[in-house]
Amino acid sequence: MNYQTAISFGLVHIPVIMNSAIRNNDISFNMLHKKCGEKLEYIRYCPHCKTKVKSEEIEKGYEYTDDNYITFTDSDFDKLKSDNDKVIEIISFVDINEIDPVYYDKSYTLTSNKSTKAFNLFKEALRKSKKVAIAKTYMRNKAYYVVIRFGYENIIMDTLYYEEEIKLQKEKIKKEFNEKELKTAMDLISAMSDEFKPEEYVDEYQTRLRKAIDKKINGKEIKPYKKKKQKSISDLMTALEESLKEQKNGKK
Image (cartoon, rainbow, N blue to C red; front, side, top):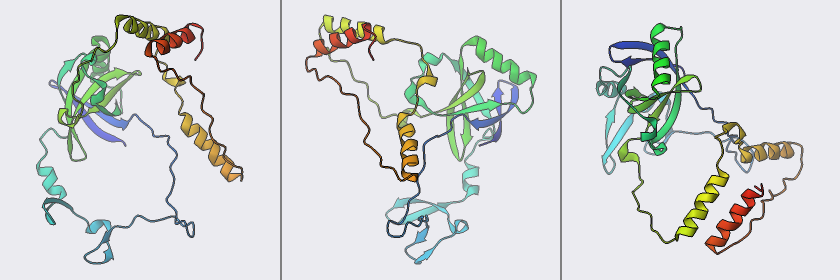
């Protein structure tokens, strides 16, 4: 993705290029016909006309009652956009701690194709203020609220889910534990506390999968993955104390 847009910061207009900040490293597999090993095709088929349908013959329809549709064209969708659909319009600045991570969806970087004074000034202001911007924009016929923040020496934009899309409900904590259990749990959290080091978090499953692919290519057998055996302790307090003891002894 390489999308040209602009940040609207009050009366300041800052041209930017939006790119995805995330790369999916998951290994992909094709669907094959078990009988002959041929790769399957994704076919758009009309059961009424009993024929394959080309991309240019497809339109979008909304089913308002059973089997009754109204259709929308690209022109119809364009009429619903605001005048500011080509920009990222900042509406306020907030503390990032006020935003629960459950609201975050996808991340993008906002860069400048040429180092402009306005872009660099905005970037430095974000860094020094330690605030994040809440803005609104359009992408692919959808309106988004986004967070614009400073991170990794970049301006990062995260799309947000709407409140109505979040399915979580507030639940009060049931105090079925005693103070000693709580203190031991807090001690365990303290003993396990460390700095956030994302470079140490490796996708172990994808690593094993790549090794399995190499073995399959070379005609070798895949052996079952051996999991570490864990102690089974039913008593909560005993489990907490044993866990704390292992942390203090430097065991993982």
